[in-house]
Image 1 (tube, chains in turn purple, yellow, brown, red):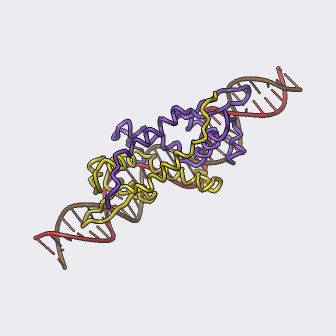
Image 2 (cartoon, each protein chain N blue to C red):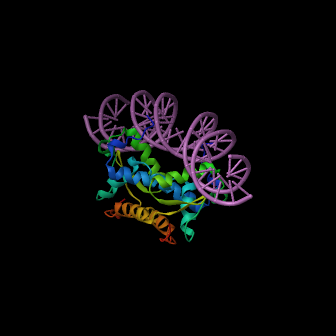
Length: 107
Length: 107
DNA sequence: TCGTAATATTGCAATATTACGATAATAGAA
DNA sequence: TTCTATTATCGTAATATTGCAATATTACGA
């Protein structure tokens, strides 16, 4: 037990759960918010900005990155990130279309 | 360690993370999808529908309910649920407004 | 009242997540 | 080359989540 039984769900449902998981931690929401508020790319000033250790921030960044929500590249010693807008919009569409058939009058 | 340091984030950010957590498990996404596809309220046929034990489904339902996304009432022996649309729309608004300032051209 | 159906709760085992110190890897500066 | 700044990875401790069997609770029908 303790393992999510992914195989009993459709691929679409697992996908939604996986992307939601990215937003399911305040550190990752903070990171995404900070990125979205900058004009262009940001580097790892997130450590000072948020107040977690560098290792932890790096870990969260890789979770966000694995979900496809980041574009990153090295610029000298620094690595710069910005939001992968296409992927994010994909998530919005998935989520928003999810409840289109909702009937509002019941209970 | 292993504890999310909620106190270092704003209330707004914690709120987004908390609601996202509801969608961060495929069982809960399935439940919400099933509810949204029914005309009115549903009862606990979710156990057969999804294929988890009754205890597990009940647990997931309470997570969804605690987030304010469900309206439930007893109808005889059965408890019937439907989506709390106001609360769901609140989540959509929170999330969607979150990235309004996103600049798309970088990297 | 007693039995039964439906849902909730409890307790526990297994796994996942979070956080951080230590260390590694990489690239520019001295 | 050596030093330093920046980011990634590893190892580990603490906590959270998932899932289920067993049990409790609640409401109806006989």
